[in-house]
Image 1 (tube, rainbow, N blue to C red):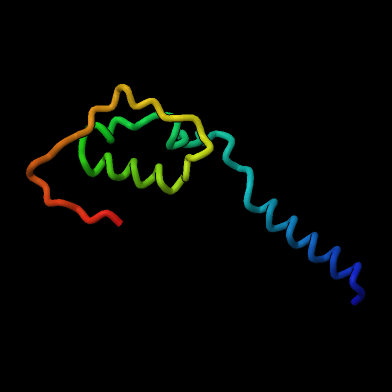
Image 2 (image 1 turned 90 degrees about the vertical axis):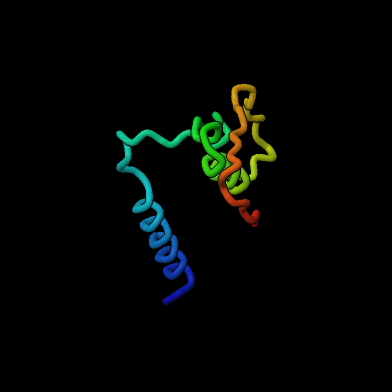
Length: 86
């Protein structure tokens, strides 16, 4: 097989794989970006706040707009055990 045929077949395989990954979700609403709004669960419980902070760190929002935290009240709970931060 010459190089041009191999290249064409490789390109066709890549395009077939990419086309299989997309589409079909016309009715599905995309989840809002973690930086769009602080979820209510972050103000309701310490675990909810930790889940939000974990999701925020994964996104690495350094180049994104700041999140409005003016309505967030950090939860406190004196009954739970301290958690290790990874």
